[in-house]
Image 1 (tube, rainbow, N blue to C red):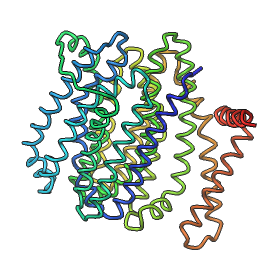
Image 2 (cartoon, rainbow, N blue to C red):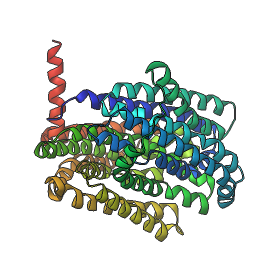
Image 3 (cartoon, rainbow, N blue to C red):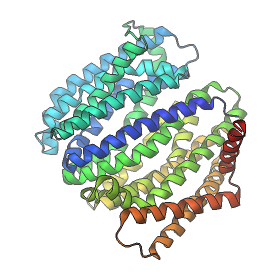
Image 4 (cartoon, rainbow, N blue to C red):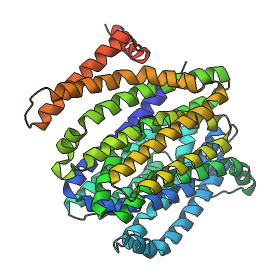
Length: 479
């Protein structure tokens, strides 16, 4: 039913390739820097994220959804993106001292003014990447984004070894969009065009405005914890939290980015509502299968993973990462149901649900900020779970993909990995493995994987059997 599987493959290679390079670079850089360096840069994450959202303003989704979007449309949005990006940077430049004063860290003045250039450079790449997405040129996107992150990560590592501290992270962020611009110019013959049509802009603005507001408040929700921790706790604690979010995002945000970026244009092209409903069900089933498998595995081995990869100085990240993974457990439901609202043209519903999602997150922060970071993360879990349930309730019915259908898919996919997790942890606790982290992690991984495969085979899980069928079919082709 879901054709063009190569699009998912290229998107997966792109996202997981980017995250693999970033993750490996992060490991190397983290071993050279201290948690406080990460905390200082993370303090500005909400400012930079909001600046980027304002420049993009929801027009990317509008261009993809618009059936007759032409070069003039894309040029108009390019001019808008770049103009607003420059304006936001100028504002940010003059606000930098006040931001530093709020967080009581003078280093933030220069960090903010340099890191802010990222907004301008990112604005220059948005429309061309969007055009590639609309044309389903996911291979080209993969080349650009993988090349960009590779160059930026190498420079970040070099600066970390040269003992440049937080500047290694700052210039790593800036070089990513700069490299993307260079690749577009050299290898894809892209040239910026400054043609602007006020009429075209106003035509697209109504749909995009709701999305822009939604994206902005989503960024506020995603980064509000960094702001509160940076203000009311130490930079080191924010560094530990930031490292946990990086690991969590590198896995689960990547997974959901594949779901969002690839399924949105494919689903938008399908005009038959019954076929689209079936596509929603298949996509959700497959991505929940992967999400639950990875989540259960990480929850059971968080401490070992952190110490083996980053060293003992980052061990305080482990319990935070475990709670962050739990909070993201049902995130594919938010992604797929958000897609339903956008594709069905319900941008107002999308905006209102985003308001609700952010409202729940802000409420959780207000109730828990005076307590420990772990209480704050439990509040985050509760807020995200309520939000996911409401998304299911409000969006699924638009295409006959209601709450009970989605809950059935959840139950079918969740019981195997978490049963495997419980039995694997119980097995580890009853074994005397000594103090070897590698040994403990190895045994846990073997037991978890063995049980996971066993339960899938016995229950004949549909996603698992489909995967096995494709593997054996491909082998027969080469016999």
